[in-house]
Length: 92
Length: 275
Image (cartoon, rainbow over all chains, first blue to last red; front, side, top):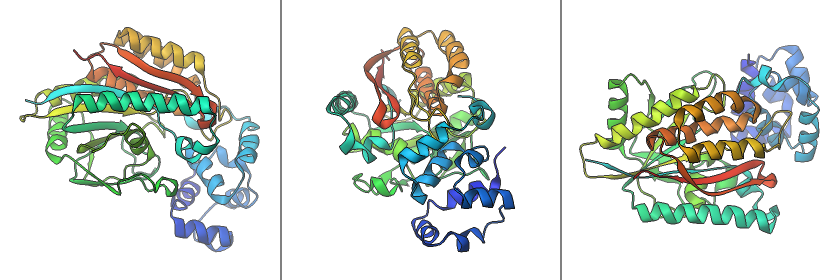
C-alpha cells in the first residue's frame, strides 16, 4: 500500500516553484501535508529505506534527486534497503 | 481504409539526455545508431499518423486517478514538462482526434474500455525516442498511455490483445491514412528500488529471442514468469507486447540492443515484420 499524503507531497514537488520553496525550507511545505508523525520524521531525516516502503519507487527517486541528494548517495542507500522488492512494488 | 505501415519499439530513459555528456563513446555509438536506424525506417514508412504507446511517469496521472490505459483524443498535446528536456524541439504536438476517436469507439465496441484525455502532457517516454530518432516533421500523434509504473498493471496477455485490437481499429478506419505504431520503454531496468542500476542482460536477450520468433503464447508465458525479476522498469515491455499484438505476432527484427549502464537501461530498438 502507498502512503497517500507522502505520495502527494512527492508528486506535487514536481512543480518547480514548490520544489524551490521546499529546498529553501522544508517545514513550511511539510506543514501543509497531513503526514503521519513517523512519516514526517522519515522525510526530515532523509530515511530512504523507510520511505521506500511507502511510495512508488519512481517518485522516491525523483524526490531525492529534487531534494539534492547526490546520485551516488541515493544509490548507496537504496541498495542497502532490504525490503523485498515485490512486496513494495508488485510484479514486473 | 487506413493502412498500418510500420510497428516499432525503442527504449527511453532520462539519462539518455541528462547523462549524455558522461556516456562512453561506445554507449553513445550504440544509442546513436539504434535511434538513427529506427528513424530511417520510420521516415521511409511515411506515416500520416503515429500511435505512440508509452507509460506516464507521474505527469498526467497520480494514485488518486490512475487509468490502466488512456488514449489521447485531443487536437493538441503538450510537450515534455521535465526541466531537463527544454531542448526538445516541440512545446506542443499535434494530435489526431479523428483516428484517436475511432480507436476509442472501436475499443469500446470490442470489449476494451480505455479512459480518454483531451490533452495529455507527453513526457520523456514519448518524446526522447521521437526526438533522438529524428522523426521530423512529426506526424500527428495518438498517444496511448499504458500504466507500467504503479501496480496493478494490465496483464501481459491484455496488452497483447490491446495491440491486436489497435491494428483492427486502424484497418477499419474509414479514411486514406498511413499509420505507424511506436512502443517505447524497456527493456530491463530498475529505478528507485534496491536493485537500482541493475540491467538483466540475460532476461533482455531471452526476451528479444522470443519477440524475434513470434509465437505470442510463448512470449506471454515467458514474460509472466520472468518479468517480475527483471526490475520495475521492465514492466514497460508491456508496450512492446502491444506492438507485437498489432503486428499479429509475426516477430520483429532487432535493430540494436546493448545494456547501457550509464543510462541504467537495457536499450533495445526493433521493427516488426508486418508484411
